Image (cartoon, rainbow, N blue to C red):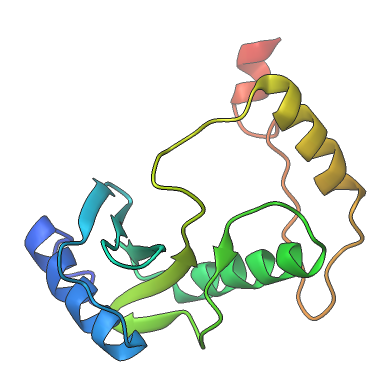
Length: 146
């Protein structure tokens, strides 16, 4: 991977341009949503979000795309990975493309989040890949909550 080159805004733009060209999309006028652990762009002329990894964790990103496809197949209302062969690597960065559901960032109410979590946990496990077991209170946070 390309972790020796920092994921600066300039580097992210180069990756964005190349990734969009490979996917047949136009990166002109794309808006940088944020740059942190990943760079995230919203394309101007298509309802697409482009996510560029900072660390190049190909297997983790591949699992994210698999989970998104599983949730789509289950009818669960979650972000949709574009129907492309992805993720792909550009300049050593792992890139994914997602369908943008809106032009703004909206947050669900706590009640809506609760209903979605209940639904999510009622789904049968996916076939073809395993979800890692998450134990959020095994780390130090459990001690801090006690």
